[in-house]
Length: 397
Image (cartoon, rainbow, N blue to C red; front, side, top):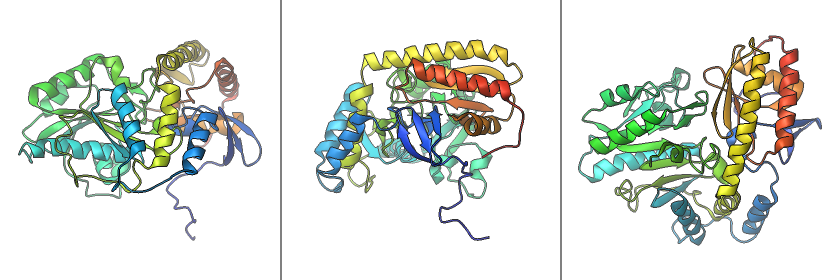
């Protein structure tokens, strides 16, 4: 058998989208699908948002790419906006979430190296985490399915159970540089950290001169109902990785840091050919224009409350399928009794409803943040029809 032109690393579904319209995708066969997957929490403005399209078109006609060897008025402006909106003092722009986490890891190691403590290179990470697919980010995860075929892993990571503060404290040793954690695990099954856990990590970091690194690639940029999820925990990190929604569908990520945490990141320590290019900066600016205000964030919380409330009522009708509803903002999950990938594939193929499977046998519900009541009603109608007709079947891609 010959290999396909696209390297076969994805078990691709039969759905082949060719056009997007707001909160729907249209397939190659003309069928219309309700998109509550949003490119896995990426398309926060939906598809074909006029403000995002206009910003990209204008910038593409002006200047798409130069080099980070030159000054970047576009990058400086977006970085300042992010600094003004967050805990951070400085920003490094990337093309993806994995690159943002890589930068966060390097920044944490450089912090201690700058102080003459090169041995403090180890990050404590947590079970069922997902930080990306690079060698460093799979090494930061304890998931065997991500390690298989790629050993030896990179050293410098210790794994502790998620939400186990005592375990995290016990893991601190002479080589510890900090903690790397998702405030709300996305791929791991929409599992929010407890207040006591994140606040405890912040306290331990302060006590031991460690850094607290947050991976908000999936839960950040208004997804959780605040601009970043850490705001809901009453803490600030030292370093934060962000991506997905920040570009609204255009490849963009960023590593945010305090001045103190970034003290080891001087000229020549890090770089990216494409990171922070003018076209990406225009996309990021357009996204912030829409989402970085209290009115929009309040609307996310209101839509979340309505959707979650109706889901919690709904699952009681189908105890043989659903276990619970979890998450924050429009990062919601439904834990299932049937195999999650099979149920997600069934909803897609039979009811034209797009969701995403996740860890802990969870169906992720991560719609565009611009949904309205009509989309929630349509989602519930399609889900209800799917649940009523559900019969177990072979696992679909």
